Image (cartoon, helix red, strand yellow):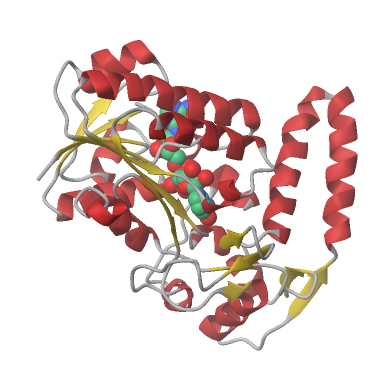
Length: 329
Ligand SMILES: NC(=O)c1ccc[n+]([C@@H]2O[C@H](COP(=O)([O-])OP(=O)(O)OC[C@H]3O[C@@H](n4cnc5c(N)ncnc54)[C@H](OP(=O)(O)O)[C@@H]3O)[C@@H](O)[C@H]2O)c1
């Protein structure tokens, strides 16, 4: 059993990771903001209900003084698990949170005696074309050079990011696809399976000092196959509508040009670039020699499938999470 300091505990994967750490018998101290969640809608009591079994400390995780004073409080910890990430993915926010806030935390963690740091990252950083990917990579490099034991977990797509069309399909609208819907694929991973994998990094030597791409169980699924699963879960005949990738290019182009004149539009241009990235890049391990994504080389973990998740959503057993700014993914 380890004493674990958790960052980003109020996020989708952070909440699941606190549960997984507690299930494995670890002591968890979560350092969170007093107003947390999408749009700051969670009050302290709401956060406490979401994270049973964890000791909560409130403060400003991005502020080095608050980290020391309100977070670590001069105590010793064995490990740090971070699921902290910019909620917007906008470059300035990503550099402030995914990079700078983590650097402050790395400093504080060293002083608190932390031996092992488990970092939730993203598989897409293997092909970094976006600002938030560069910010994540810059911190990954600092962590690898820190002298601490590290585990960098780079998952493929989360279920919540593949659920953006549930409501429109339920209303009888077609499932939107880029191109023929076979341009990209991923191995969807559930929150609980990913959380268990993150928590397992603390005890599995095969995950020490490694970059760990990880997907969920089963074969890689194209966007069209994901749509077919959703129609099957809702008991509806499949109906697809193709959107040309060129349309995304046009939107990115227009917003980028306008964003140079009207600064208010610059974040929207970046969100459009993020959308275009996910419309055209698979969330599978990239083989730089063959110049293609490789489903076979993308490891799998866990047992929960996207099809079962869609069925649970259709039956009302599973409630769709608030997707906030990530709705773009
Ligand atoms: N979506 C996908 O399919 C996918 C796939 C692979 C990897 N990933 C990566 O997985 C990571 C986590 O995803 P997620 O969906 O769990 O994220 P999330 O739900 O947006 O949670 C983000 C966490 O970071 C905290 N945070 C954000 N900005 C903060 C700030 N300024 N100060 C303090 N705390 C802040 C949030 O706290 P508050 O509650 O206080 O805001 C929350 O705890 C991201 O790095 C993402 O890139 C995502």
